[in-house]
Amino acid sequence: MKIIDQVLQRKELQEYPPVLIDIGASGAIHDRWKTIAPYSICITFEPDTRKFDYIQQESKNYKKLYKFYCGAGSQDSEDCIFYLTHSPYCSSFLRPDTEKLQPYSFADKFIVEEETRYPVKSIRNVLEELHIHYVDGYKSDSQGWDLRIFSAMGDSLIRKVKVAEFEPGIMDAYEGEDKLHQVLSFMEHYPFFLSRLDIKGVSRISPQNLNLISDKNIFQKIIAASHKPVAGWGEMVYINTFEDETNLPAGNAGNIRDYLLDIVIAMLNGEYGLSLELSQKASTLFHDPIFKKLEDVSIRKIRNTIWNLRFLNEVKNPVWLAGRLICRKAEKLFHR
Image 1 (cartoon, rainbow, N blue to C red):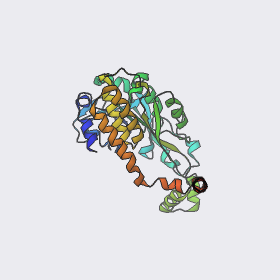
Image 2 (cartoon, one colour):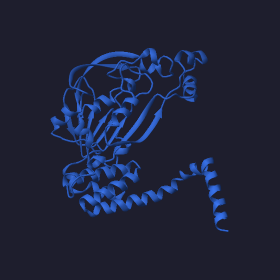
Image 3 (cartoon, rainbow, N blue to C red):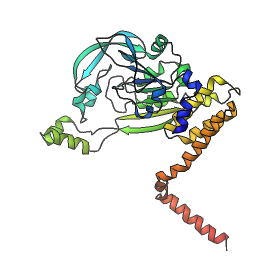
Image 4 (cartoon, rainbow, N blue to C red):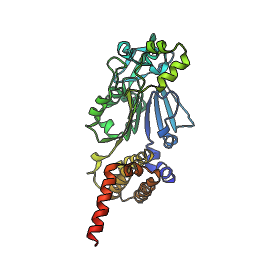
């Protein structure tokens, strides 16, 4: 959207670019960050026993990219055990719970093949090292540490985060891991709402029984993919509602930047009701014409959502249909 580029090119966001924390990025740019990435500072964590520092590098994806060759944790440690598993995507600073994983089709992916040691740093200390004093976007897929890394940032940093994404477990995959219900409980104390929750999972059929059914690896994979999945983990997106900012004095220029960025992030996540609400609040606080433009765009986007045809789900609802029939009968009665 043209309006989003206009916002991101404003002086407030040029002087204080969006700061994004990406844990578990695997080298790929996050889909929901692609629009704001060229205007942003991104900090990633990549454990590597051969390197113990960080590099600042030019990136075609980001305005500035800092790659830290260590793990992200709740506190600094020079020597933390890391469990390298059969699948690199399951490797973690937490030991896999092999006994509780046994009934599931992907249990073999969590087999520990090697133990190594990596340094770990907290986000707070990394920010101090870089002389950065705020975080706007947080995304973590740390295989069990998502919440403890985020909570260790502290109250003042957390309240200024615009969007936070977690991927906590529901089933037992790691010993002592952060669970989805703990994230839900923690985030209730902050001005965020859960914009998205996608439940992911795997088949509850053990590798041994897959071998019993077929000795062909490809057929085992087809069976595992076809069998009913259970709730294994959740992909969560929280967006800041700025409820803490509703009593700001008019003209508080230090916060106009935060409103602008939160509105952009709401739009990029399809939360046009929130972007409309924030635009209206910001218009009252700052009297900047950009917020009227953002309000108009939000209204237009809300009107356009009708073309998604989501309302058809309600039309098919028997309760909705019964209500319509009652309304029609009432209209005939009262218009006689």
